[in-house]
Each structure stands twice: as C-alpha cells, then as structure tokens.
Image 1 (cartoon, rainbow, N blue to C red):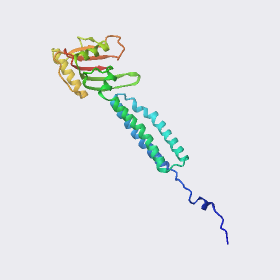
Image 2 (tube, rainbow, N blue to C red):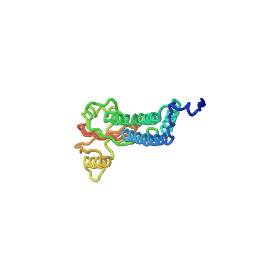
Image 3 (cartoon, rainbow, N blue to C red):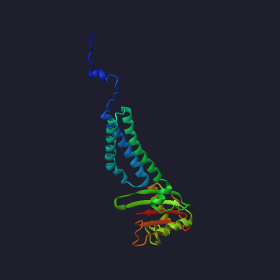
Image 4 (cartoon, one colour):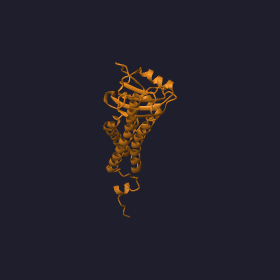
Length: 235
C-alpha cells in the first residue's frame, strides 16, 4: 500500500477561512459617512445659528476616519466575517451622524432657542417665537427675534438686559412725520426680509442697551404699549 503524504493544502482543507474586506469598501463607507456628517453638521448649524459648527468637520472627519480604520484592522485581526467588518464601520458613522442630527433638533426647538438667544428659563407665556441670525468667531453675532408674550414676560426680558427707553430711534425715521407709521413701515420691511410674521404696533416703544452694557452685546427691543408683541435685535 502506498501511503500518500499529507500536503499542506490538504491540511488546510476544512479550516474556516475569511476573506479580507476590500479597502475600497472602507473608503466608500468613509466617503458616505463624511457626506452624512457634513449634512448633519449643516442641519445642526441651521437650527442653532452656530455656523462655525460645519468647520468642525475639518477636525471631526479625520478623527472618525482614523477610528474607522482602527476598528476595521481590529476586526480583521479577530478574523471576523467580511460582512461584520463592513457593518461595524457603517454603524460607527451612523452613530456619530445620528448624534448630531438629534442634537441639532433638540437645540433648535423654540424653547431651547429662546434660552440660547434671550434668557433662561423661558417664561411660560412665550409663543410664536421666531429667530434668524448667526454667531461668529469670538462670540460676534447678529440675531433677529420676534415673539408674543404676556406683558409680565416682556418686562422680564427688558429687565434681564437692563434696557432703557430710546425716544430718538432710527425705527421712527421714515418718509412721514408720524413716528408710529414710520416705525411700522420699517418693521414691516425688516420682517419681510427675514420672513417673519408682522403685526403692526399701535403705539411702538423702543428699548435699547445702556452704554457700556456688556451682557448680550447690543440689544434693541421694539414693542407696543401693551408689551405683547416683541421684535428684537441682538448684535
């Protein structure tokens, strides 16, 4: 009887093998994750006015990509199946992207926005809150706000910023000597540009930050004598 020598090939037969995940698959996941991450950061910035957030992708993308590659290498070292390696990389990106989408949504609610731009806590009577603006480097900002509230809440905002009445405001400057008409025309144009709802004021009153007031930079508030409709500018 001839004994056939056992070859390495026969020894390997029956041993489970795994194929190494393609680097192109990892690159594709990283590219798609980067696009989704930028979208999530843009969404978060549009909800909060913090337009420096998308710049964070310059730092965040390389970090997550490095974690992805490290995770891929570790799973390959553990001899995980190709499908599991691919899914794990995709889940990593989805967790990061989902976090920023959820954070953008929660930070962009009317209550959260009011507390970000105006004051906290939010008075219960605040309603129909709208804002438009941005925050730049060093805290520079240009924010427009409008809302309705009970007189007590409006007075609370005025006291919070220490605002004082301003009789010679540019809101009263217009083509007519009637200050109420001029103010409403200016407010209407301002609201139209910002896509804000406009409600004429019967007896407008303008408040502004006193000289040297640091909190909130320069704040300007226009309201009616009944303190129920408010238009604000923060710069």
